[in-house]
Image (cartoon, rainbow, N blue to C red; front, side, top):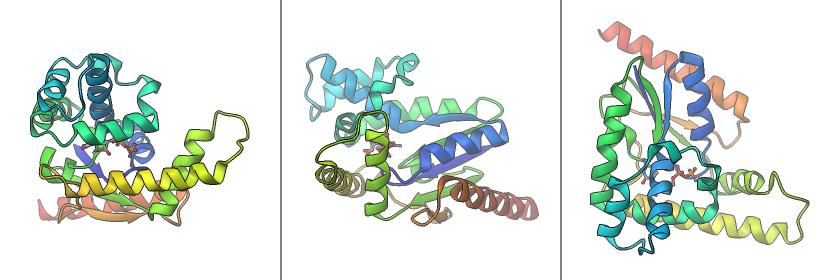
Length: 218
Ligand code: CDP
């Protein structure tokens, strides 16, 4: 059983993927963490993010035990990830890991940008999760400031988060290899006006509908 979830930055796909995996007893892979970790390791070795061979070397040496490091979630590494994610050699190395991961029983919920289109084109269910850029920036701003004290200049920061999200979306949608796009057979879930519980219920409805269709077709 493979459930593929794609969508732009801060669309809610990561939180949804985790909850969906728990609901169905499946493994979960956040593929954004792979690209974030490659960016982290490239920088740690003094490499340049735009250097395809330095980034591909970091990808081939990636220690997956470091993928749940909370330090991967910083805004800077999100940006850096989208730079290393443009290199075809980096994507080719990470593709192998992702395909191996989903093959392990009992199956997986895997979220990213190119899962339904490139990594798992035959996934049992595909969702494309999105929300307006403003809503996504607001959520990401709340996430980034959640643990800190009340801030001076919060509005400026939220505007910066929005600008970063727009830039990253543009980079992800326009790259030559595996750009962010909705697979033709993916169900669209717009979470702009949904809180996480409502988005989760909507996702489950879409998944059950897709599995019902597959059952009838089979
Ligand atoms: O959590 P957020 O949506 O901000 O980002 P992420 O899922 O951690 O992904 C970080 C960056 O990695 C993205 O902006 C993409 O450039 C890249 N990425 C990718 O190219 N392909 C994937 N399957 C997942 C992430």
